[in-house]
View 1 (spheres, one colour):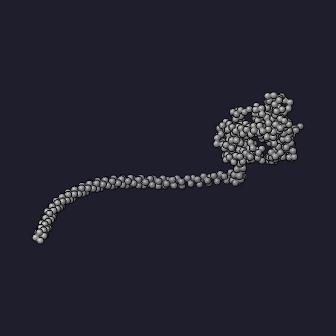
View 2: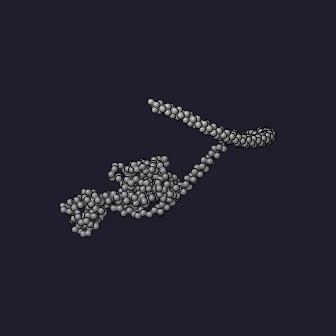
View 3: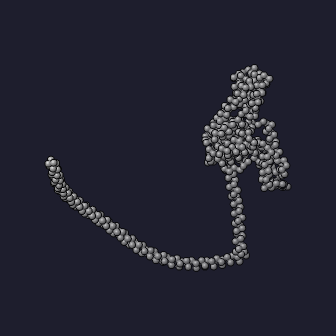
Length: 517
């Protein structure tokens, strides 16, 4: 029991001692915290004072800087204002001087106007006196001549008009004659120069081709058993094979040069190969046709390269190449087109026109002949359609349409192409024609005027290039001569077929004769 009491007492003593220690420790800690707080407050206060002093100094410096800047700006503004005032003062001074000068000028002008007015009055007075004297003289002249003023004026005007009309007519006639002579001379010079600068071979196109054979035994192999080989060749090529007594030769006959060329190459290949039978003939013909298409394109490209023409549709190039296998009166169509193109380029250069456009139009002017056997219509209509299809320039289209006179030319290039087409077709050796056909055409040309009233005689001259028609002067007047020329031209175009152009000249001659006895 005593132990428990002692234990309880000790516990109570421990608690009291612990509480006292806790109070003492807390007091010590509070003193330390207060001391630190005071130190912190003092430090903060010092820093705040320092920051305040720094801020005050910075503010004062900024204020001083602003003050200096403001004073500088004010000084500059004052200087500008002062300069502006000086300029205004100077301007006012100048304006005062100008006003004074204008005043002096006005005074001088007023004085001059007064002098002019006085002089004008004197002139008017003198003019009135002159008019009076003139009227008196005219009156005296009228009395002496017996003709009034109006009548005299009318007579003078009639005389002047007659004289001027005669002079004007003579002047116009002289100028027309000079112009015609100069134009003819210049045209001849240009044509001769163009023809001299261009040289071309003579046409030698034919309608038959001779294929040489290694021996006469080959003829039998070409004919084949019961003629099956020759029939096959003629059927697939469209060419006639003429096998006669000519030694070691076979003749291919066709008016289509392309077919004839394909048949020639096919036959020569068969002869070299030695295997001649229908199936082999068909194989070689197909192969040759494909190779010929490539060759056609090559002909077209060579023509374009020779002429320096670019930007041509590939399909149109193939059509141009086909012209190599078309002829007109024995003249190769592609050769003719190249010749017309080069002549057109030369003439265009002489006249200051577009040389490349003239060459392009000259090359394509007969493009319709390449496929006129495949499509209905004249080669002019077909050529126009082809040019439009491949988007050729308007000058080229018009040159194609007008080179035979079917359409009026709309540009100088169209006229140049028509002239060069006639030159190329009519030059010596360009086209082959038999004597019989030539004489027949001349006879037909002279008879084309039959049935037209007022015509006395008709003569075909210049190898059929010109028709001279002599009319009866008592029945046909000058104006009717033009009508007859037009009628004859239309009949020639409608009834005849001819290369190039034909000039129609109507001659009306009046002869007045008397016999003195």
